[in-house]
Image (tube, rainbow, N blue to C red; front, side, top):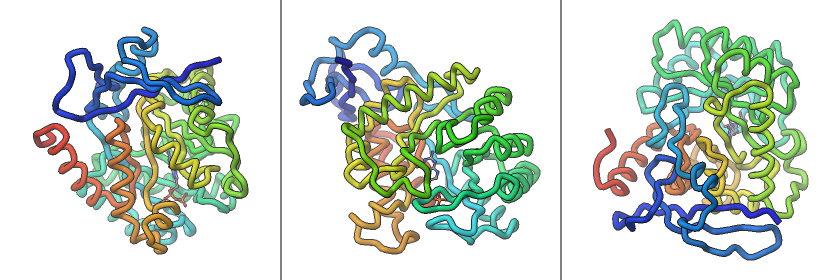
Length: 339
Ligand code: HH2
């Protein structure tokens, strides 16, 4: 039976001499939970890890959009859609979208993620021509307007990715992990762009109907592992890949909780982890906040819990709040200010 290895991330200033550094980042670990399907986890010393897994858990991660992964990074969300669940309709006007993007960069966003199709539960598919027409002009204006942050396009479609990259985007955030559009992998491979492979079960229209897993943590891990292999086979170098467990995409609240608590398992894939929890439904439910725009504090709390497990990129709506929280969190965790 296959064993999976979840490093137990620590931040304590008293670090044992034989502890290992997690992903070249800010956490260390000297114990690892070994997980097998249908069994209780067992804790072993990090020194007992198979050498290959120890290598993958500890190796410093490649840069993403030129950004070093030895400290947490903020990806600011900008949806130019009429129907996104929290900012739908707010930025359809190009001037407002540009102002918002520039504002997010000023608040601390280091990557901008531009979306032209909502993938919230129940969302309908948007035609690729329409989606490209929403996204590409904004990407071009951001580049021309001197907004310094790299731009990511949040799309499942090859045509939108190609047009976005043509307009100056450096990264494609695909919530289907290159599964939705058979032409997507080739577009990313041929472009040199980075890519986020996010796990989703089903399509947005129906994914929340009755999502089912026997062991969500291990299944999402194996699914992402297979998508990374497929991306590599299509000619996308590992150094360009980021992974994301896809919180809320074909997952119940219990599934989300298991993924968030076990997040450090995903370091075993040897790639940077992107976490998207911002303003999501469970934050509203657990936090008692029906209004999506009011869910910033809960989103920050869950995002920091991800960072405490070594997640490198937080995809957020509330950039300034996240920045402030991260600065204080880092000051406390590292005992010094972030440089
Ligand atoms: N979540 C959403 C969209 N894209 N991409 C990644 N990598 N990870 C995520 O968790 C993720 C994502 C959904 O959030 P949002 O963009 O705010 O809403 P909508 O899909 O309604 O536009």
